[in-house]
Length: 234
Image 1 (tube, rainbow, N blue to C red):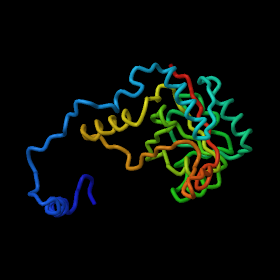
Image 2: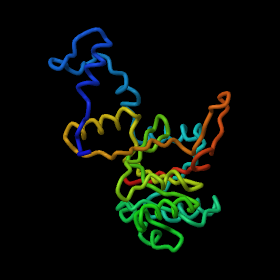
Image 3: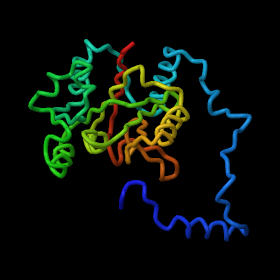
């Protein structure tokens, strides 16, 4: 299937119009411009420091640890978390931000594997055997304590999913109020004809489930503990 090809679109839309009891509308349809749009009002006037406080408070709700540092102290903080978790092997993204934030020497360690350094099925196996996965956040939602990961290329989604523990490296510049800001950016990229990742993960702390009688169980099908490291890049 070539990029941008949509199959059976007409028959699908015609069927929907028929079920609605009307003719299909193919022209003159415009996106509504709603007078009231509350999704943009939430924390719209918050400063970066205020968003950080909201994020930290939400992390207490989603059972996620939070550390704060600058670029110079980042390696030491990562190592202290690995020691706390008893994690020996780490898996990371192949991401230029690791170099930009001074982590070149960390990536060269024998106990650190970088996604893409082996054939894909080997990458998955290596990552599965890692104790801890480490990625950067592309966006961070203060309201829900969610990191947004734009997967693809050297940014394998397995790194945040398969290891026992997870560290999200969060430059403060990535923090936005809520989901509205991120979806807006994605819509703008699509409208401009830019390619967006086929897989975008929204991760809110360690894995959890409340399927059984709404009783929350943390660490059921992914990382059992998670830490967000807030990095002051202002």
